[in-house]
Image (tube, rainbow, N blue to C red; front, side, top):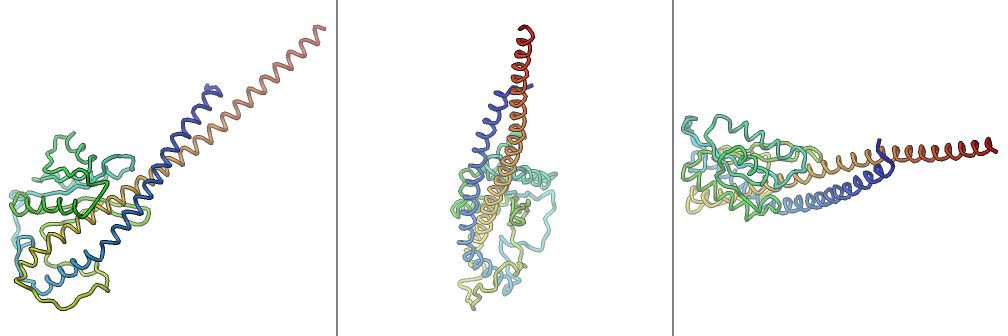
Length: 294
């Protein structure tokens, strides 16, 4: 059975570890607030783009464009699916990475695929399984920016135009509510002609507009930044979810550490009390023995 000194050393070790997990919790909470603020700041711009896209689709329903979904159906045997997978650079975030990678594996099963990976966790996962990665975007997860979103978007749009891929799906993590996250699958390319209106706030301006030089050229100009906005949104939301998941994991670690320390303190006090009782018993026995000899 461990002695008092061993128990005391273990208590100190757990308390030192708790300081680290608590610091990680505080850092993640700060990053989460900052990411949410950056997302709120850019939302009006992307809502405006989305509003313009929806109005154009509504006014020009018969318009054709390489980025828009056509009526024809391509046989699965001739289709190459693109997947943009957003993971973290590191672990210690519960099941955050595992859920995204599991869903990606399910979507890829039995399909011809090309992978575009964001995050070191995803890169390591696919490389360990000898799964080819078309593009690995580094220096993105911990600092999602519009510039990085444009780089990612331009990469897969180029492959889409060259028909190296025939569609693209992003797999990322989204906030279900303030406490829960969920793995989300969003089809990015090709765009649907019928776009939902419910996502745009009612106060977004919708003035009359004139298309020049042509609807197709206007679409060619606004679709890349529009898609980049969706990518940026997925990156920031994933980043928020990563920090939220890490906060939950660190909170659970802190709670577990507190419970273990409390249990060890009880054991330490019992051990110490038993030692004191043993010493008193030995002293008493020695005193009685001395009185008998006298």
